Length: 174
Image (cartoon, rainbow, N blue to C red; front, side, top):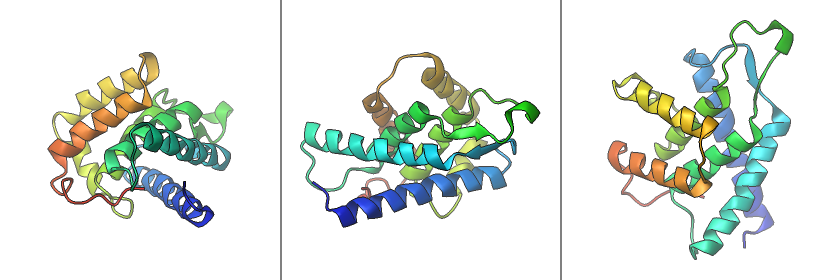
């Protein structure tokens, strides 16, 4: 069980990563300006993530911090559940993006896997030839197919193992 201080530190860390990734996506013009993050919904995302962490730690008998791919998968599932990216003004939206939350969840997962909360190095993957089709397929899965938070964990684990060279180093997870 986490102490109240550790829980608060975790909340702050997850919130900073969410907002930092959103800001990087916005600055890179990878999301339409017509959307913003709902502060109420990102709080729901983080609280749901924290409850999921406790379940995963119990289920897999994890005593220490969880690895980055587990954070990425659990956060992606939570983002999709609460859909915190919302239109600024629904009646004035010029470019509707039905996959905005799915895209945000996936890119956020990449940022977590690459431990890039304060930089946008993970965005380099978005320019690789394989990425667009992979992103489209992943978004389709999240929007229209069945998945679990644990299946998302395994997707991010595979990506971490293959694409992030420092992944085998001791994790700095939650």
